[in-house]
Length: 73
Image (cartoon, rainbow, N blue to C red; front, side):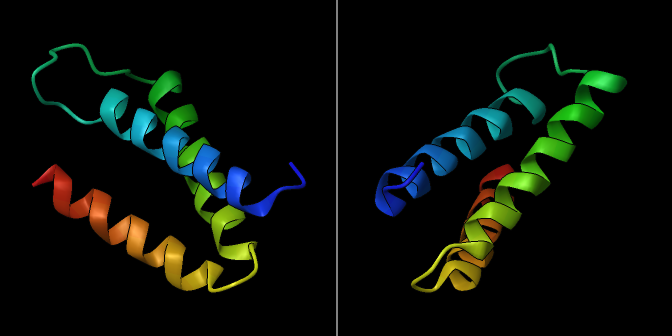
């Protein structure tokens, strides 16, 4: 995606979706085995892509990671 703002927004939405799917909460079904590992792999790739973006990408990726970890508690 060429538009950096749109790319960042899309990646954040993907992170939120993956966070919802992989973290236990109101739903009882959490992906297991290879599906869970695949979700974790994609999540790490998204954080890397956010970190590689311009205009404070590393700080933004770190803030998103912290925010989603805090949301899990």
